[in-house]
Structure formats: structure tokens, C-alpha cells
Image (cartoon, rainbow, N blue to C red):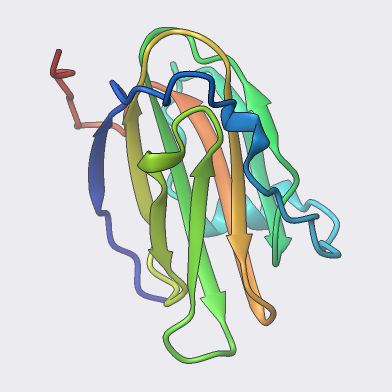
Length: 154
């Protein structure tokens, strides 16, 4: 399996239109998922730094995920994700319901992507949206991967 590290800094200083409720966007129902297998997910994903506080344990899934709700400590957290698919060119989307314009697209090509998110303090709601035939592994933790430092832009 090929493993790479792509880093995307998302500065979530996005404003929601007045009167708009980000929770009003259509949320697809999760599709049937495999039972979470933490050990298998840990083998696929990069190691979580020892000092990191884990917000979503390493999880395996298929299709759409549940909505993961968590409050990071500080303003920076990392989403590590790998996706594979039986469909050529398939992609998965990481949707942050609190900052819908900051969605990330992950290729379902077996390459691990670590997305570093810088956001104002507070709760976050993340969902994986992937098509039929797509399997993924995901973990979310505070901070950044080992050896990476991010300075949020204000």
C-alpha cells in the first residue's frame, strides 16, 4: 500500500450568511458501516502523536459515516484519513458542518491524507461522505502530526 502525507491548512475564518444555520444543510444518512476495528485502523493510519488528545478513535467505515461531534483543545486539530474504492477515480468528502465551505476532498486511492484544521475554539461536527464501494479509515486528534508546525493566519 502506498502511503503519503498531504497537508492542507484550512483557516476557518469563514462567515455564515446572516440567518443561515449550518445545521440546515442536507445530511445524508450514514450507510451500513463495518464494525469499528481500532487495531486494523491503527495499522492503516499514521501514528497519533503520544501527547495528542484523541477526539475520534481510529475507526473503519464504508460509505457515509455518522456525524462525529467533538471540541478540540486549542484551535488546531488533525484529521487523518485513508480511503479505498472499487470505483476508479472515487473520492470521499470530509464535511465540517460548522464551516461547510471548508470541505476537503480525499482521493480513494489508498494514500493517507492528514488534513490540519485551524478553527476558532468550539465544537466541530465532521462527517465522511463516500460513495458505494468506498471503505475508509479515520482518526481525529488535537494538534498536528509529528514534525509539522502550523502558524494560524488571522
